[in-house]
Length: 590
Ligand SMILES: [Zn+2]
Image (cartoon, rainbow, N blue to C red; front, side):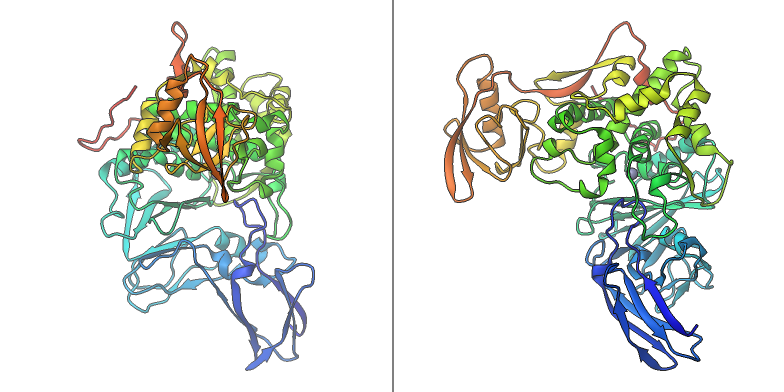
């Protein structure tokens, strides 16, 4: 092996849709061979690459590296993605690079992962000090198989009658939380059965839901082929109200095993982790997953049918009140995915990762259209069964697709001008959201003067929260409980007097700011000509601002259109017989 060698760390991490590999955190890099330290030099252009020269007579190169990890780790648990420590020959397909990994965790901590252990001994809770070795695999699969580990560890088998096997591995900061309550386990069993019935195939040898419950480790949902890395707050699954906030998380990430991992847009799959990913079809990768994930969440019982509709109303209204759609197509949010990531001021004018929710409405539109065109003989389920089931059951595998294949598979369900259907909704500028699916589903989006039951429930779990979107559809403000303005709707009532994100409302109609004072002012201004008077702090200055708005409070809900079929409720009807935990049946609200 003597001569020049180039090693690399991963740059484009699958599922992240951005070049955010952890190179900045990689430290302590030392190469040794035959007892000697070898010099290395970083590539001048590709900063993820390390160049070194292997001397004559060397058969084994030892590389040491550390990765400084400050996220998803607490005193009691950790979630570990292998890319943090991956270093491998550059310019080589990662699926061709063999690798065998091992791990040592703190004494008493359990391990959850889709990797197979080969070391004997106690697993998934190794003996103190023991090293757990995993079966040999390749770099592509290792990167796709993260680990959660923690002191408070529970592994539950799910829907045991289904092959292959499914598990959820839970770690939590507090002792009780990882022991999931029976209602959550019942919904998880339902989810596995519902996905089995819906997709009709699978593309894994085993599936592990990995879940961290911690207020410190943060929120995450990252898909993998044989597992998913999910993180929610400490009490995220401890009661129905908390669960509602992330009700579609596990169903969404599970769906990705089919849509995103097995079926991958051709531009989003790269045989190495170095070539840029292209996001143009993310409205399928994420958008179809968003749609199916929400449907599965309702079918499995993570939320009721009414809660599904309330959340759909919120999604549709948010998109419809996104002025950025006046200049930017949904496809553009997908193409630019790697630069439109997190919250920033004027988000509504920029647009964010809207391909998730836009895709949800688009695929609902397609689902209800197929049902209508076929007199309910077929649905989007027939499409996903074709699209995600090609090749039957497989182990972990990536099969790419392009736009034309989507059109062909839709036409195989029911002939229609699907290319135009998709282009119209994705590539074109449309100032309004796609409401066709909701309307064909037997509902219409309306605005009421009170939040939906679901919004009230979700609002109640963060301690008298003042919902950030409470005034979005009225005066066009996202406001925190302390009066901080996080966003202003472009060209909305609050934009007229030049309110801006980052400012803080100090007083409303002569009263010190409170959520109640602002709501009372919106109600008081209804139907008369007196504006809402604000005193606003911007940096070191204070100014007055009048909002000339008189339409009262407005919250989105779906209203049933009487005399039409209730297709939305048909869509969220379980395909299998749901399992319910004793005494924990959820009440239908609304
Ligand atoms: Zn996703």
